Image (cartoon, rainbow, N blue to C red; front, side):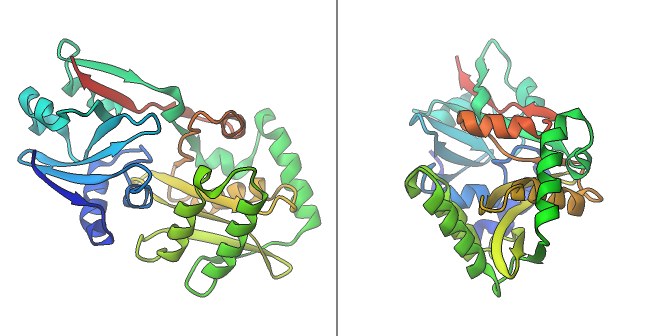
Length: 285
């Protein structure tokens, strides 16, 4: 049903404008995430009379539909036709659930798909008992090193690639089990994807970087954070420094989901999550 088109860089402006109008906090609703994960999630654009959608596939090989517009313009018959052989609509924000009456739809969510949302101000200050360990690591880092920072650009993206390659080499997984490929492409197509990022140097050696973009007017999403763990406390420093840079403009930071990874869940929870943003699945009864 409808016209199907593969995801391409030419869709950037159209999709970005659409996402900004949707004004959601969900990390999936950025062009960079749709584009960079197009192969792993088998993303395709689906255009129908009542709007534009993305069809995709999750790790469990379940197929789903991402609405790219307010779903009020579609009726139950159209929803059925759009879903066809697919499993559910995803990710649906809580504020859209009222469009899907429970007598016609089944609503559920998977905790591992929820986004971690933080107050930028708290990440920028590391105040309070919760941040004691992170504060100590930050102080140890700053007492040992004098980091320098530069915006990521065509001039230094190769330095960021060096950090990424070392990070991958030190990981206990093969590149297909990490986000190495996606992060590598993000660096190579940085300006085309309209991403923002900072690379950090220690004694002129590239040591770490953070890449992200605005989700809406008050939330900034951090897509990638990679660093050399030989610099103890560097992740605390990068998150703290990034929050300081962003706090005047963005109230919240979105550090995306943990994908069911226990170590990732433990790390993300330790930074004082303000709330977990649920992403709902909606299927037709």
